[in-house]
Image 1 (cartoon, rainbow, N blue to C red):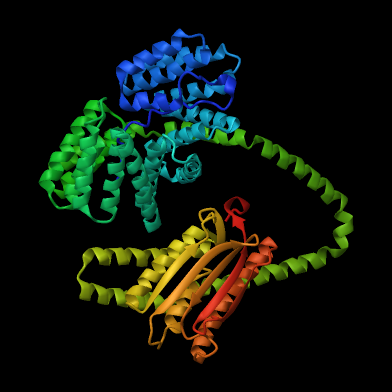
Image 2: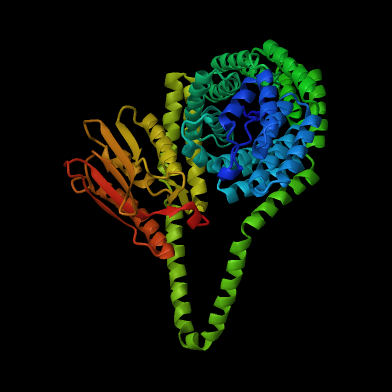
Length: 620
């Protein structure tokens, strides 16, 4: 069951980081000390620190004191005084010589204020201003905070599809920061976003990343005894347990999150945690408990949030739970409230204005590039006119050559589309799944296997429209394909997929479906009739500024195998040859491949060399 996950806790209050210029930095207090004050909600220490910073003559320290005050007031949801503090900070910054370097503090504070006051147009305006300034200052920590605000904005406006590029950008920044004091906060955020993406895409690698990042965050949070971050960790673990179908564990994690939430000194809204707990009980078919906890969630959401997107989402989930419980009057009533709230908080006019602000940011960012392209266009136009008479004599020849190239490309692409995957595989896989269902009687395992099979079918069909995919995507596809083949041929083979640790697998592109034909050949024909366990080894490494892919098995080999096996190897070779032909033709590269018996005497090894092609180099 897909769920609408609610961002249930206030964003981290750690918005303000010191800038790179020494003359604009407060030396009386570090950002780590500021974050410690806010995260521990030590109100006495907060007031003392603010007084100390403002009593001195260091104006930059006075600017930082307002950051502490704003975070403190917004944590208490005293938005009127928080706005007054931001305006005072802005006025102070404009009186200083380094105002350009310090204004980003105010942009982030305004953005956070708009987030709390549900002014999403204002949030969009200031978040993109902060992002632009962070890029200019080359301040990665502020850039990260601005990106997180934009992701929050998109989520609140039901535009999650715009988030993933921002998340991957933030992930690279987080990985460069190392084990600093923001580790728990940053990796918790990453874990949550990966879990959200998994709930949409269903790719197992996304959930694995979410679990990994959550473990890193939980370890750091427990070390600091940070109940705020510990709560967020257990919330992500609860979501991952649901994805695995372990609903009892999900209830346990939800209870752990609620337990630690109560230890936070400042009152926090537990509504989303109770929604999660209610949904977990619904999955366990315990509808009495499910209704009890969804009512608790509605109570806290109305009390602490009012009419917000989060409250609307609670009513939407409540309607589903009451319907499943057979409580139709409550289901109808809550659905009416949900529709009323949804119409009031998600208006097309508001989304239009927010999208216009994002487009304005992108337009300003690319302004110089557009001007350069315009100048080049004029230059090329001049050259075209000047050379028109010179090329007239050979234009017919070039046209004919171009048509020949296009014809070759179309014929090659048609062959590739016809040979995406052996259709017998789908029939045989379904037959194997049917036998598995009858024999094992394990619904969860069957559901997982069907999910893998449906993913393979979907990706195979979608590959017709994808010229290139990332190495990470190809690895996950091959792993799912091998898992389904393992059901067909239990214990018949093992496999390994390895990659160079320095390889940017999420950025590096390769032609789609380039590995699968040889893996299929190894399983279907290389291992046919052998009296030992097969072994498939797939590797991706960077060598001599090229990507080297190897696919090796310990099967019969193709020189000593039957004629049918040779025919299948020829089929796989033709697919690869067509792929590389198109790649070299379009990108003017020198990709190639080689197939031979393995030097060990058993099996075949395929070696493919491809150019290093990254996402920013192609529109595919």
